[in-house]
Length: 504
Picture (cartoon, rainbow, N blue to C red):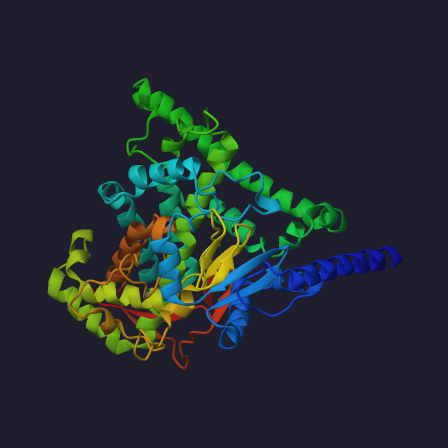
């Protein structure tokens, strides 16, 4: 007990002295924010979930303005809520704000990723490879058969629920189906629901536990000793991830070798270029070497997580609003019928281009329910002044996505679900290149490369769900849109529905 007391007191004194030094340093010109004298206060801030931290920052905005500084760990963390400042930073001076903060201790050995990578040649190579080889619109049609298979799996499940009269939770089915789809895109194998479920479980377990293990980032030399069991548990989950993903990478590499040798009996009949295929021969520009197996596994894990979790969550939010507002669901059905005709059994991907109201429904969902309350942290490549305040190179910068999408100066009746707001006649620019009105995928150099794939999946599945079924609330229940933080911002009360088939 005495040792604990001495350690805590020493840490508090050291942090307080550092805070006092910063206050009286005349060169500091950071954005305003509440004072934080103790290391305990910083630790408690870091322990908050992104949603809790977002709520906390929102309480500070009226007092401190659109740029706020919080001291989390030893470096300043700056939050920006104004869309004009976001445009100035991410579009007008995009190269300066395109960096990322240094990786946390837990992820220090897994830095060869696209999202967290620093702005430089390695990031450009990895992003260009993903965009050109997998996510380019000319490549997406290669996976249309896989999308049809996943859709049929979901429709068969929904039909079985209808026959049994059973009400059910949607999110479980959405997430599993989309995981099976992105597993196929990543590893190129046939849809194996058992294997996909195994991958989904280990990926979700790792991400859900990340906040619990975040204390290991806080003075790692000390916390690894104090929280030895948690550190061992984290390493064990990482090992489980290796055991699940690594065999699939090795098997795919073997398949590629056989394909090059034209050994047909060893090659899947449905073989096509998968994401992992593009990684085997990549040459890192600065280190002049190929990716290691561990790095390929980390990039594959990043692809799986980003391709499934955010899309399945947005899919649930979309269906929740269509259940909550039956008149919007009916209007969407009318548009679909006008495009595909009464006799159609499926909405084809080409049909989606002629459905502006469908796209408006998806955009309104992303505006009102972005998967994350703020973007992954940015960093600047050099000290810069924004809005009269210093943004230092060592700072982490968060842009508040949700606040920009809810801005009542831009959006009339901003907290109401109204897809019609996107039907003004001019196509809405979600990339924010001209003006930022909402940015669920980010903007500028760090915009999500999967924006086209995500919109395609959302439109394709929503259209076919509405075409095949009438979606209704469970008797006596109201659709609650209250939020909860998991890996992303999800419904606190997952949507349960009752379905009535529309087609014979």
